[in-house]
Image (cartoon, rainbow, N blue to C red; front, side, top):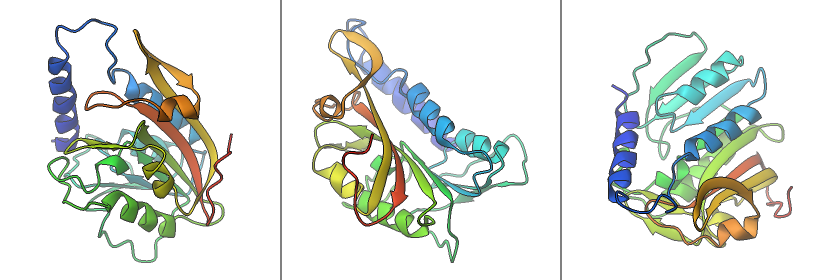
Length: 235
């Protein structure tokens, strides 16, 4: 039950155990979900239309989109069993690399802390695909309605890194590749500073300069529209 959710919790527990005995000011990811989910919820419009929640996990964000009036598909590689029923929320088990959407187009795509895992075998049932994240972003660009549709994106940012099987971290090189073909209409960055284990809003330059690890990175929060040019100076 909630296999992906349990796996995620166990992963955070193991990371926490690895930090045991360190000073309380040591930087870690505690509190990241609050930042990420607040961004997503704040940017889901009322009556959002057709919604895809990619990597939905326990489907909490899917449920919020449904309660806001959306017609929601929650897609996850693990089997998700919901303890409730709501007519406008449909959970599907599948791999975004090859899932058949037919002619479906979406008004909103929620892509929260998911894309960084695609193609890193050994976690969440992912298969090995070096550029799986870029392939999936391109797939989602094609199923996002243009020009009115939006993608709500949250990703790890910092110096370009890969920590298999856990996650990728997007820096000056990989982030530009990830956003290829999208317009950035809004963005924020959050990080923690040395000696202060508290999330705070920071500049893009500071976030991208973070030296990441298996247990810490900065957060990049974006609202995207499908297009051909990335607006690097979006506020």
